[in-house]
Length: 101
Image (cartoon, rainbow, N blue to C red; front, top):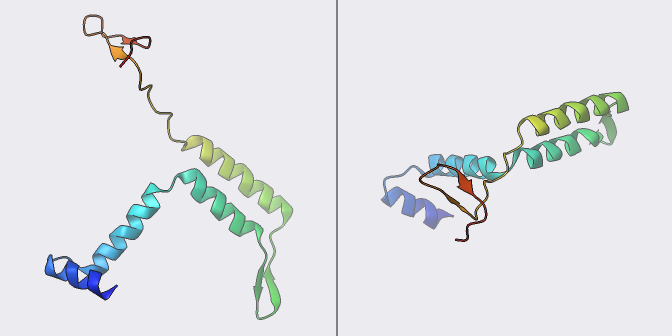
């Protein structure tokens, strides 16, 4: 860890800033659906603090959270990738799916 920080300092980069940027890059690479499922799983679990149950979510509350998360997952779903095979006809401007690469 220290060697990496020293290397960054030699390259005139702040190790703290680079560490934060790495965290942001990792978060940005994770799909929203995965993040939402993990968040919802945390909300379903009861919390125990010093041997006492502190927070238990009502099933109605969990139902509302599931409904909202489902809506957001649909709303922010990444579009499906464009087809890879085929080519664009330069004369007509249309995509020809039957063309081979």
